[in-house]
Amino acid sequence: MSPLLRLHFMKQHYRFMAGAIALALAPLSVHAQEAAPKTPLALRMAQMDTAFRALRPQVADAAKNDSSIKLVTKMETNAKAALAFEPTKKTQVAADSQPAFAEGYQRELKVMVGMLERLNVALKANNNTGAAALVDSMAAQQRASHMVYRIRPAGRGGRGGSPN
Image 1 (cartoon, rainbow, N blue to C red):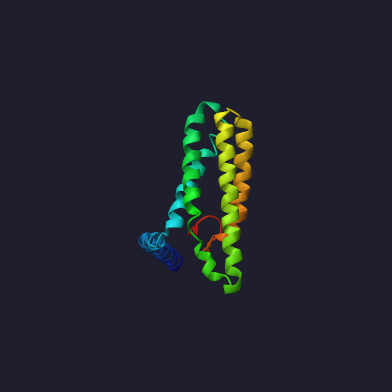
Image 2 (cartoon, rainbow, N blue to C red):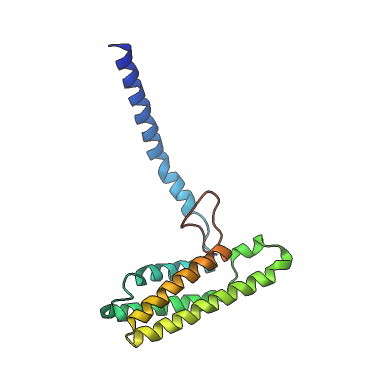
């Protein structure tokens, strides 16, 4: 066997072994991410997120209004319950700024509750165009408030992390 051919097979062997090791260790990193403790607030926010993800593609369809109303009601219930909690990120804010931080969180969540109430009214009135516009506004409000009040783990961009 020529030295070049032998070198080629060695490279292929190392690539295969590196891939096999990466695949073997991948479940360990996923398990470590799932092991993070969920706070009561995080559980409420996760339920809201699940409902919101289901709502967004169907809100403009009047035939799905009953389902949309149920999703909005679920979101509203969880948002109102979340008012009883404070975000974990509050502990990362300077002590003298913590009251203002908590007030801002409450204010943003109350804005979301108000939007959900208006969305419920729009859906019950079969105003799906208005409902779709409200959902777009809610998505923008969610992004803006999560930038301030949600902890993002280091090294992770985009979605993910604990919604506290």
